[in-house]
Image 1 (cartoon, helix red, strand yellow):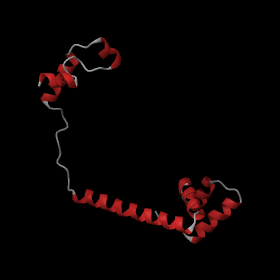
Image 2 (cartoon, rainbow, N blue to C red):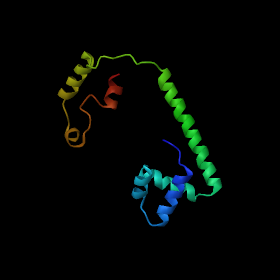
Image 3 (cartoon, helix red, strand yellow):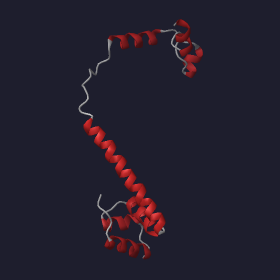
Image 4 (spheres, rainbow, N blue to C red):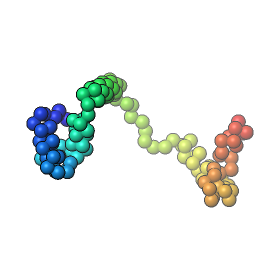
Length: 123
């Protein structure tokens, strides 16, 4: 993303004064509709508001760099087997074969023996 130039700002102001919409201005400047809209808001802001926006943007860029650098330094993740374990398949089969109540069928309640309360009582 390249920064806006003074010429682009002048073009934006001139086209908007002539009644152009953001899509038309973006097509001329090779920028998106939202970028044009946000730049207009920035240009119409007071100098104090512009400074606040610059500080927020700089802080966000620092955050992005920190997050991205952490991702780079994390190293490759170990490859895990994409297939389900035998225990997971057995639990799925038991849950599917467990008896269900009327509210289980209509409202989606867990099968008998698989609710949090049932697991608490059986533990």
